[in-house]
Image (tube, rainbow, N blue to C red):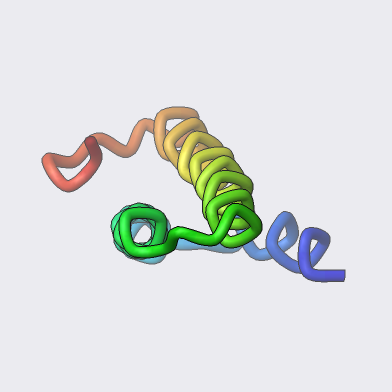
Length: 77
């Protein structure tokens, strides 16, 4: 399962991999916000809202993981 794979891999992530993952999630957030701004169909707006919520959850998780490991970088918002 995708979530199980992600949870297992997070323990094996290096500092650099974790920072890269955070950067990728930030790009995903920017992309879904752009998508939201460019759709008008109610169902597509709903998809964008739920997708953004899921991405934000992933971002929060990764930030928590970085803080737990004592990773502090100017690259983390």
